[in-house]
Amino acid sequence: MGLDLGTKTIGVAISDDRRLVASALDVVLRKKFSIDAAILGSLIIEYKVSGIILGLPLNMNGTEGPRCQSTRQFAVNLDEKTKIPIAFWDERLSTQAVEKHLISHDVSRRRRKKVVDKLAAQFILQGALDFLQNEQS
Image 1 (cartoon, helix red, strand yellow):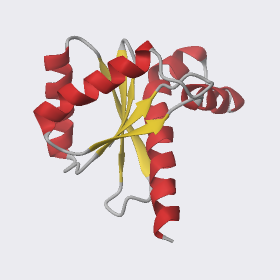
Image 2: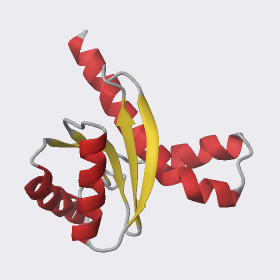
Image 3: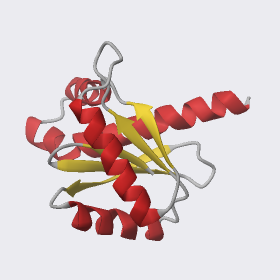
């Protein structure tokens, strides 16, 4: 499962059983952690998730700022609830790449707003899957 953690939403993506292709799944509107974790937990069970790739919002120079700290804390808290492995993936420019792609396909601003987070999660997860495939080759 890939997650794009935002302050208001969490984009969610999943991969196929062979871990080759990431697919956008959903956008979770954030409320409080216990509710967010319960929603993610139900998706983890439903899709038989064995690991999570969590986008890490590094600064453009590669350093970690406050958003990275909150993402890491979210991972610690989620790990306590789910007990499945969580890995981080550099998400720099993922949302911008998705936005650019959607604009190039003439997707309206309203529609982009609805899908950008789950597509960013897909972008993050696909990057990690591609990396793992290349490491195994």
